[in-house]
Length: 124
Image (tube, rainbow, N blue to C red):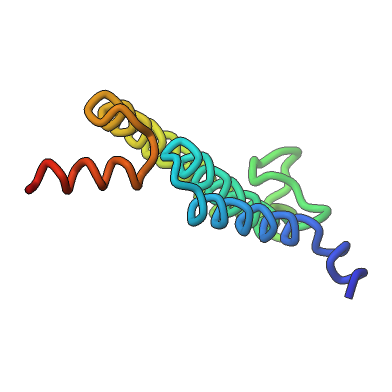
């Protein structure tokens, strides 16, 4: 069992990171900590995709030295997905942080329970 985990170290680390991020997202009430947890989860997914897309002994898919055989190169799709995901993740993080700043200015707190309490109090 331990040898199997060591052989798949990248996948194991990505699953542990995902668990840490998911736990942070669920258990903390602070909005900044929730954003950090979501970013840890994103990173874990990118690590998993990169680990699954890499094939040992193959080169990046850039034609060089006249090698035309596809079996000499890795698949570029996972790399493209990871790069696209990183761009989307940065955009989502920027939006979440800007909304968090607005919430803090309005309610004076980053605690989600306090914000919801004040929001319901305003609605009465």
